[in-house]
Amino acid sequence: MKFFKIIFLSVTVLVCSSSNNLSGLVPAYDSEYVQASSITHNGEQYKVISMKRSGKRVRAKYFAYKLNGQEIHQRYNNWKTGKDIILYTSGTYMDVSFDAKTAELKGLTVDNGKIVSEKLAVNKFSGKDEMDALVIVYPHGGIAVSNLKERNLKLSGGGANPNKFYDLRGSSQDLNKFKEWAKSERATVFQTHLLAWKDKLQFEYNHGTKSAPRERRFLAIGTAPNGDVMHYIVHKPKHASLYEASKKVLNFLNERKRLKVLALLNLDTGIQDVVKIYTKSGAVNNMITSTNNQTIYNARNLLVYYFE
Image 1: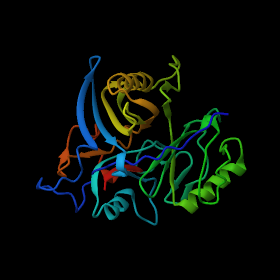
Image 2 (image 1 turned 180 degrees about the horizontal axis):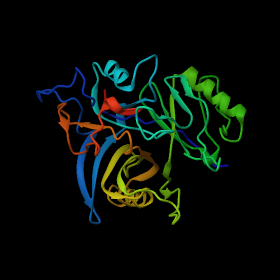
Image 3 (image 1 turned 135 degrees about the horizontal axis):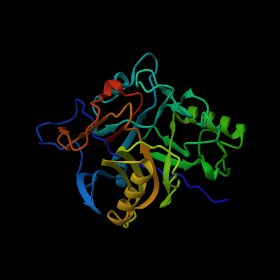
Image 4 (image 1 turned 60 degrees about the horizontal axis):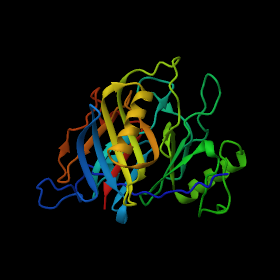
């Protein structure tokens, strides 16, 4: 069995908050750690936010669902005070409805230790497992990604056995233990499609699928040639199927950024295409915008990067 090692990642995110300095005198984040750029590679444009983990200055926060009567935008606005936000974007998919306001969670979901969706994701037609990426966001702002297909998640703290490989799909006991661990550690957990893992695409082109061409957005986690752990938000504005976009973005990261990609994750650009990027002075950077004019008031979940 392959050993899965959780990689802790801190991601810097600039969020519009009372601490953001719009005068430009005091940068809200350090450009040594966070950079925004528009790059053309093999004739296609990619809009990229690169974030370096070194020093744990860049951190992540995920709002998985509404809690205690508060919608996502209310929770975010209460939390952001005093924080320097880099960006926020919609995270994983919703289910049941094409209306963002009535859509429901899909897959195992935990929000700051509170279980909000208990079941792992399965295809509602075939009943087969899907959404192989299990994403864990820690209270300190680090992120770990596990490939559920490998069935070898390692945990530490929270009463977990550090020498055990946890198989969440094959063992109900392991799944229950993981939920107990998440509660104890106040972890936030969600599932999404794992498009690439360890520099390899995780799905093949299927002529029978009908993945609608659209703009695509991804979260990529990997290692730079100098050993730095990096997080990238990559937005591909030219419409493409999920397979075509995943293949091209993986190639872009490998060749242009020389990134050894641990995981490439899909971010929702459908019914809740919510996104906002900030400059280091706290102003809005319109290099990436919602294509259907969705605002944070439409968010059913939210991935935020901030700087400390």
